[in-house]
Image (tube, rainbow, N blue to C red):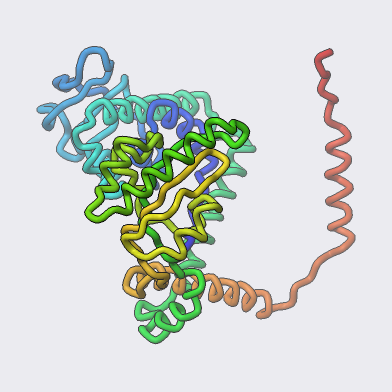
Length: 356
């Protein structure tokens, strides 16, 4: 099942770039869904628990001078700080496994704290210059606020009932999805590989003779195919495992191997199979027939998909209902005038000189 991911908040692009530059992978998840703006706070003296090279003031406990109404600062930079509650929000927004991995990653935490302090300091600089009062930013703020309100409200009026889908709905969805849940037959194959390029007649002849000899030895009673593969196979990837490739569907095997493997029974050793690269002596040591992914393994994904689908349909119906509840009137003349004004504004812009 496919899950849809929400896009990043455009207004936090600069902060996101800073964060990605200093953190990769799991640490970036600590950004979570935080969209709070920073506040100017009074610098506090705290006991440093970070290495001197980090340049970040940290504390393991609550500073004696911290006001009771404020959570203790974890890191400070001048007049800005990251407090304990903000760090807790970021940690709680992370998947449990990523949070556990980060717990002992002091360098990663320090990097995130430094990035967050840089973000807050940058925001304070922008505010001091009245950057937030720029007309284009005010319009962007309003548009972002409207999108958040719209999405949140629309989700609230279109949310599927808690008991949806019922077991019968899940089962029906599973039956419909069975073609996509099919698992191809799996063959556990081992091989002894002897390289011999097709264009080299002498190499092909020598490899064929050696392969025929090895087949006789591998097919003998109580033969140890794994030992033969470790001693004679030239496939560096599988030789250490006694030639074992593991369970694979036919589609992942070389075309020359597929009809041979398909006709073999467990325990069989094939005659030499020639490919463009050389000769392969194959052994089938296991087989899993084609199957369908069990219902219990996909039940929760099906539930999420059905709820998402129902909510999408309900949201669409709700919006259509709003349109149908009244009379929609579109002023064609005003619309044309808007397009004309837009074209005139574009033509009035000074041309940008191109470098020769």
